[in-house]
Image (cartoon, rainbow, N blue to C red; front, side):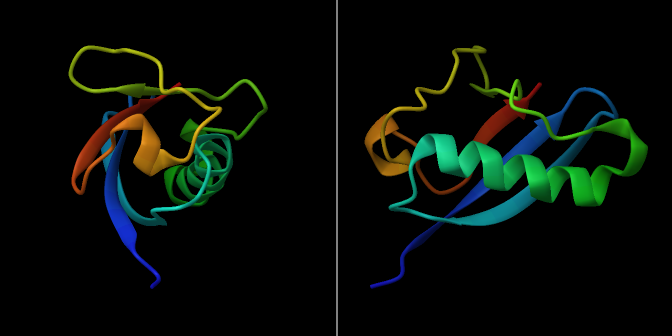
Length: 84
């Protein structure tokens, strides 16, 4: 089954939130890379993808553990993350 999670990514650089469907079994590191590329394509000159991009849970600001699949780090449909 090809299950996906709807994830909202907040970008402080422009104050915008972007919604994306992400495969549930993807690793958190790969999800970060994928989301960074997608945000870059939508945010224009406000954001540039780089290896230093990190995702943080909202609310709270805890960093997302990148060494596990996203389903294993406790993300659920509608999860809110901040990208910096």
